[in-house]
Image (tube, rainbow, N blue to C red; front, side):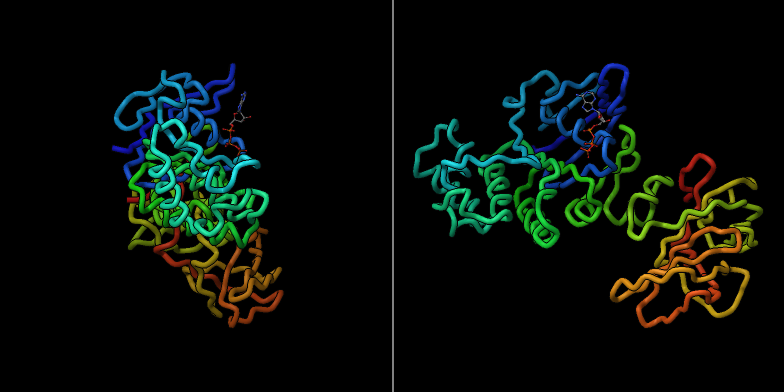
Length: 362
Ligand code: ATP
């Protein structure tokens, strides 16, 4: 069974801890993206799974077997790197078939396998060309074809699309996802591009400073971020995170003082368990309705900067105390600079984070 599991995986470079106590299980046929800012430990985690870096502590279990001490070859993993190298003197077909070299297949069987993956990746027309005669997108697909031509235990991808331009990246995301869905293998993809993770992954593991902060489906990490970091990292434009004083709770509404205004916010009932305290209120820019009138559940702010984004408009609004609140409205909604806005957050999309930065949720 193609599975990958890491348990309490830790990597130290001298006194520096690059990865700390990472736990993750990837099932057969599942794609998990390791996502996080530069330097958070994604690549180090992937390299430990691959056997290219030795784990300081913890277990690496592939296909049910502990593999910490095994060489990369013995782990039988197919990897696609950011800087994949194709052999320039070999044809596309020979490049794809290279990993089959040591499998002892007959030429006819090897050719059939190459043709099969070439068809999956729409490369069958270019098999006789040389790498210098194909496009960047085709080169990327050749690297993927070369990885899936064997029947490895699992797949690891390290920033596989980062060298491609935006258009190509967009179409490749869909193509790779489709290919992986047909393979029933455990796959880990490292990326710092959240759109890549949100579109390609079944689940996303979000890392910061060597620690996995949350593992969840793309919907979960977006709709139920576990803490302030995940909330700020996932979603564009970024979630508004405003410090507030929680005063009391009643009838599903929290009374808070936020940017100098006393506001009643519809929030998760678990907030009732909190004592009056400092909290962070998180509201996505698309989770407001803009009203003409002040009410007890609206936040007052003045439109300061208006950025058209095509079908939508991003408004930077400033509260009396100077907090910048990002609001996204449909293009048809006309707002002028200087206009007073009364912003009503959607209670189902209003997050409260406690003093420790963790989401307060039932
Ligand atoms: P990026 O997206 O920039 O590649 P990353 O999340 O993949 O970042 P890693 O490459 O895993 O991050 O690095 C994690 C941390 O470990 C970084 O601070 C890095 O400088 C450090 N690090 C990585 N390799 C070594 C090494 N061989 N010796 C010392 N420190 C290292």
